[in-house]
Length: 285
Image (cartoon, rainbow, N blue to C red; front, side, top):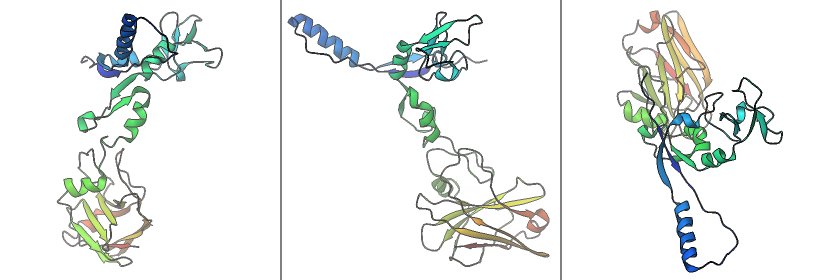
């Protein structure tokens, strides 16, 4: 196993304010220098394991408790936390009382840590207590792309990623409330569909994650002003028409691999029988 890389944290401190106290000049200057020193921020290197709960090995969250043997537990691993600021230590085999570790709580309150996605461009220094919440919504978090074979992206919306990183994806403009042929090729994995002359933009995904066929699904690529659009996808075969009706869902970022909630199954016998101009139709309104 490789050695663990220590986490870099930023410790902040500040002086306390109190009533005015007159002191000789020398003492006043010393006190001012001390107060200024306390307000300074320093950067240190710290082993990330020191900020983990001794019980669950998760990040420490306040209130914290420490037993006489030095075990520090987070709030989720303590029992009877409301009883006189005391808790039972879950690490000790023998009954052991743990009390609030306010010194460590003050240390955590002054810690700032870099975002886990800094290699993707995030330069934020986050208070330790808000690290998980920040990373859950960080704009630079790695995202998944619904287009098969794409390794993913970071630092942009799905619409920008498709436009910038997938220039080979064909684009088709359709009229509202009109069934329009897309004339797809057998090798296509996706098609961008533009509705009218507005900003409505969709991604028709051709998945190969189903046995013996293709899965056609639709993703909305618009911003927060995305309206509810109803769609119909049709594929014409020799024996009839396959159709899917639904409502397009807006997707800004995919934190998890794409799995269509609804898709049109097209057997390979139909899809492969048209190497060019596959009779795929779409209707949007």
